[in-house]
Length: 225
Image 1 (cartoon, rainbow, N blue to C red):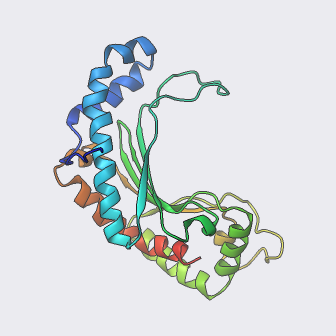
Image 2 (image 1 turned 90 degrees about the horizontal axis):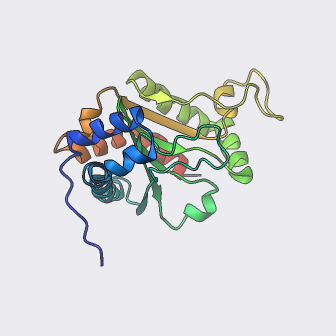
């Protein structure tokens, strides 16, 4: 049985390690500094993931599961052969009864790199039926409500990823009032922190949970699909 470790912020060493890894992205360098990685990034990252999973379950009323992405890059089919990710990415996906039928992974996204921290909510890719449902909702009254929620968030500095399509899909007018939504294949919103030191604070989980609450209107809209 694993025991969840308390989380009191990433050590400042974590940010320095990622900056150094970015400048020295080589296997020999990483091997010589593996102990720094283990104590400053890997163990705190797992503790942070456990604490945030609990905080998100409390915030949303839905169980969540965390995925801490590997620091090793898959370079088999990439021209970029750098072996490591100079960042820490964690996803927090809903693990409720509707998750399997929803047609997309709905959740929250955390990214720490040497220059910034990103916190996101939403879904990256709708499958075919889910995309059809999203477009139907976006074109109807639910879409008008979503536009209001997004406008309020953007007015508060929240970033909205751009739509993936250049044109509205077949069946919808090019000048549809919610063409921006219809041209999307996913929907994610983001809070950017220009100073990564935000996650070194003892109240880092409370800060992240507070800002997840700001993004909750989009999460809840997507959860209703």
